Image (tube, rainbow, N blue to C red):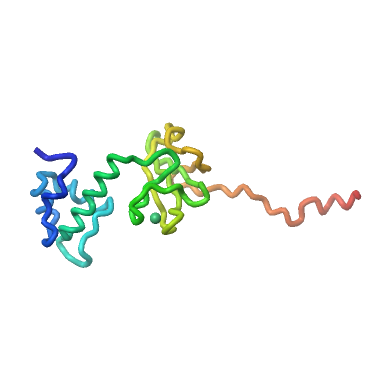
Length: 161
Ligand SMILES: [Zn+2]
């Protein structure tokens, strides 16, 4: 009976819910609710077990629905704090491959300057990169520095003018 699109209206905004209560309310697995917490559902600070305000759960689910209807277009990465798809600062993004067909496109939000991430298949990056300037890296690998110092470049050849 669990729904992939839980109805935000089932949540009472004036009460708080534990992970278990949220799971029961929407007939979902607790792990689904824990995933929400990782995806931006904010829990009340310092509370164990984790509880979230009804108003926040409703906000999160409403946002999620909007996002499902309006997926990020090419060249955009969704910024959770700004709650909007953004073209990363400088039109630049880094594609970090974590596996053969899994990776993350990451950049910096031009408005809040936080890192923003989008799950991508690096082999199909053409469909999502838009006109971004994308740097490709492997997870764990450092970006290789290609700029050579040019301080003394040509000095041994003398002045030919
Ligand atoms: Zn932002």
